[in-house]
Amino acid sequence: MTDRRSRFRALRKVITTSSAVIASTVLIGAALSASPAAAASASSAAPVAASTQSAAAATTGPLTLIPSGSEWQWNYSADAWADEWQSPTFDDSAWNSGNAPLGWGPDARTQTAPEAGATRKPLSIQFRTDFTVPDGVRLSDVELSFRADDGAVIYVNGVEVSRVNLPGGTLSAKTYATKAPNATVASRLRTVTIPASALHVGENVIAASTHLNWRATPTVSFDAELTATSEAAPAPNPVPAPNPVPAPEPVPGEQPGAGDECGAQGYLAPACGALWGAYTIKGDTLTSAITDLEDRVGRQFDVTLRYHDFSKSTHQGLFPDSHEQTLGQDRTLLFAWQARVASSNTDIRWSAIARGDWDEYIDSAADRVKAFGEPVMIAFDPEFDRFDKGTMAEYIDAYQRVHDRFEAKGVSNVAWLWVSTGYLGAGNDDKIASGYPGDAYVDWVGFDPYNFYTCNGSNWTTFENEVRGPHDFMVENGWGDKPQILMEYGTEFDEANPGRSTQFYKDIPSVLQRYPNIKALVRFDAGSGNSSCDMRIDNGAGMVDAFAKAGLDSWVNARD
Image (cartoon, rainbow, N blue to C red):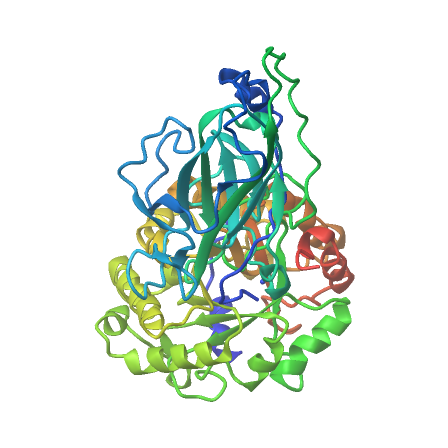
């Protein structure tokens, strides 16, 4: 693409310091991950089965401890969770209250959305309710049935008993659900078994946190029902407390991955692994350019990248064009939306976008993306830190203007990418950091690592050397909860040492596993054999095969 060639005519220093979301209320099948600690926690109170009181007045048979539609205390805020919020002793009197289903959308009896029509919402909602276990009964067959968008964790008396569609490890208010269940899963209400020893006579507390997979989700619903079978406890003689009930085997369900933590989570990001993508326009058509390369490397790309401007040009400006709409049916489209008009090679000042001069183009793009309907990624003016279009404050204003115009149009199928060069020298690290639009506006952070070598006379670098510094910079600046994308990457070919050239690709899968926040990477296939800066995939012996083999690794086949 002619408007991209200028990036390789300008020398850049090498960096050496180094899925379809359903828009409907879903029912999540809860995969039980009960902890043996649940049984131990009951030792602090009289276990249900150890009651010595008369059962004459106690109910026997089926017992509903929490009926569906019950009243719950709830808290919905972007603030950090209060300490011990899931504990039975936590004071939730300052929280809101309402009857289930809670959430927003047509199914919700109690609306918990922060404001009507808001599309940029906090990620998690916390719920609490208490229930009473009658004295003089023995409980068995304790079952919890619940629905919650998109992921959920459940606690009984402060002990976690179930987690679904969430990563392992410590959760927080900023934890994304690892997926949004499809329509099949949404039609099922799953049930998990709770050890009877987790309950005690008297007041008990159920606490839950639900988590979104994407902030713009139009509907959320939470409800739960707790049932058991009761029978009269033995009387009049006391009986010993039972041994702790072993945690049951997990109920089959959707798990986030191999059980270990796999980095930051976010809209369109795989729970574990990375999306494998490419940019190329080398073909008879813009569609066949991608499909021909896929045939050559033996797999379909997860992400396809195209560059667009602020114009009404059929392919340059009016995205998604017909080729993208074809490719986007089973690939994620990534639009690099540049603040420029390509036909006249004219940059657009960020201040002009921020004050509304280009709203017509923004609103038109929002309408087209919304009508397309499939999840897409948009990076507004990627590599903003190398342009002279205004101050970083003006860049932020322009980015937020574009984002907010899309939200005003009700567009909910966009993951917003904030992408810099990743070059950290000569004070550019501060420049990048000062251009961050804010957590509420950014779903992914990214950078463009290149092994330029002969392009600018720099030393040869490995894939890991290229990504380490920018990756760590992103984490250390407070963006460690954002998935990262290499929106462009590439390498030169060293004719004097072909082995280290192919090793660049061979290293990619293992390096990505060491940097699990990197959730997507897009190979920038551009240049020619006659160029002094040849960034083609096929720029030397064995390079296509090495790239193809790296793309077959399971870590970069996260959608399988």
